[in-house]
Amino acid sequence: MKTIVWILLAMITSVITSVPAALAEGPASLTLGDAVNTALRHNRPLLSEGEKLKAAEAGIGEARAAFLPKADVSETFVRSDNPVTVFGSKLNQGDFQASDFAIDKLNSPSPINDFNFRVQVIQPLFNGGKEILGYRRAKLALESAKMKHERARMETAYETVQAYWGVALAGEYIKTAKQAEKSTEKHLKLAQALYGQGMILRSEVLLAKVHLADVEEMLIKAENREATAKAALNMILGRPQDAQLTIADPLAYSPFPAGSLESLQAEALKDRPDLKGMKFNVENMGEGVKLAQTDYLPDINLIGRYDRNSEDAFGHGGDSYTIMGRLTWNVFDGFLTTSRVREARARRNAASYMYGQMKEGALFEVRKAYNDLREAKKRMDVESAAVKEGRESLRIITKRFGAGMAKSLDVIDADTALTRARTNYASALYDYNVSEAALRLAIGEKY
Image 1: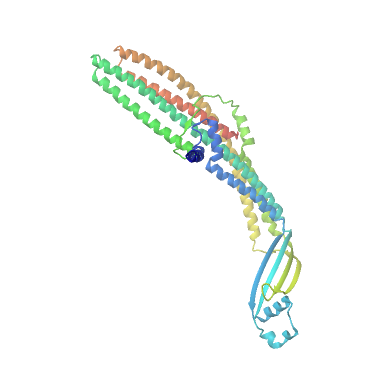
Image 2: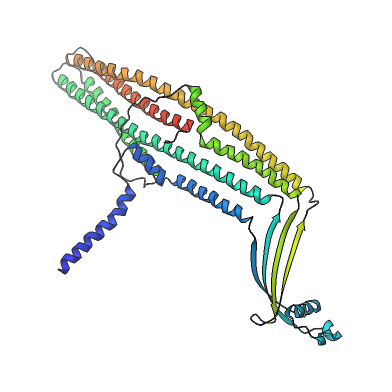
């Protein structure tokens, strides 16, 4: 019975320890949607932006605190034989005697200990509007951080799509290389058979062998490219770079229902979160000008204070309270405030110019992605036809070679042309899918 129990415990432990490892590796086969969702949860730069958003949210609490009273508690110890300090300490402790008016005691008093316990509360009444402006700036900063975080999510999704199709493209290159390898091996066998029959020269066979070596080199490069692409995708997904990864979605053409360039650009200006975030920044800088101007105005604060003084830390002594209103007005600061206002205005103007440049940049990004998408589609059409023609050309020339009516070089040229057409088609298909993702990113479309 004990043996069975130990076996069961061992099995449970094995399952428990294997679950975290499986979760860390992620699913064995990823769809594009799975990959994007994984990146949005685990991508490290995106997680960093999330923490910045939390910091901006905390800034709201900091700004609210400026409206509330500030309470401080302190305990101060002083030992002194300074006449004024001794005189004041005895009064504060409520221990002043008539004998302390003696001239010798006033001029040369004995040292005294004084423990001062104080509670002080300061309530801001008017500080030029700093509290209100600070709260407004914190809210604008939070809205800007939200927009920046949303844009980071979009960019992460785009990077994931780009990396995912990069893995798919490498797979297509491997597939193309293997097709070329298979056809070249077939050609080599045919060439060797014809050479054995004395129908062709040995150089024809050697030429086929050289071409096979070239194709094998292409396959090696394609496999290395796939390994690198998978490591890049894993890194974006927040996984170990050497984690096992298999993608489920192949490169395929899906028409993008794009409107006119002008309508897409208008959509970008309306929906892109980075533009909205920059607009919030400009407004924030405008509030910063007002905040700098508050130093021209007085500060008014209400202060309440309670003091207890005694000769030892826990002894009885004298206590007192103080209530005061304090007005502070800096009538001349060497033009420091004027310089700060000018600086704040310059920062606001700089942000405004950057906002204008960002809008132009957004329009250009839409234009570029739109043109790249159209170009990729045209290349796909051209290369698709080239693949069909290349396949038929290789079939005809291979048949002619078998009949002794063509050279080995003719077959190799036809095979090379077909391989190039297949590679170019896969590249155009990749560019189309990536350009589509870039266009969605440029117009501010959420994934």
